[in-house]
Image (cartoon, rainbow, N blue to C red):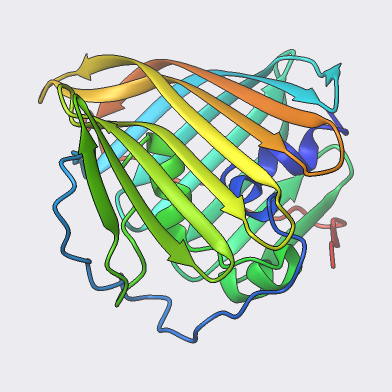
Length: 259
């Protein structure tokens, strides 16, 4: 569990951060305000909800070493809060609380915690990271291009390809037009040549609105020089607007703040 801790805790930010090695510019924005949507012709639908909860399992292969299967609990208040709990063998080892302007992570195994904002996290990962990116990746939703950027959209049969540039990153999404869902996300860093892919599959209708949700998510990170790491998430129980959710998070006394 200790070895998988950084990967599981920053599951979404890892997707973008792992593919960048050089600093890229970030823009200063009001973090509490959602970005202005970019108008494009992509035919992708995203799960619409107020509260969403899901449980599943995460299997991580870190540079050829398979780590113990972890149980994952996810709670989301749309566009506002993402809450993650990770446990192994019935013991919670980590908890994360993410808002539009803050990232807090509790490591119960090492009795330490992380608290910062997305700007600080972006500096540490050397790549822009936003709440909307994290939410889209965890839920298999369509990822909008940055404000002011017009994506390139092409159609080939039943597949629509959407591409846009974000600093040194080329972001590509493949959309199944029959389902109108993102099936693959690919992020490549032109500087390091590192590549991250996310495959979404096993789409099922979620009551009561029968919206399609990706129950299987496979993340793969290929470094230009080095082994491949991957993580597979298999969701099971997924509930949309079944109840008003709580997002408990507190730091026990005696925990050290991680720099």
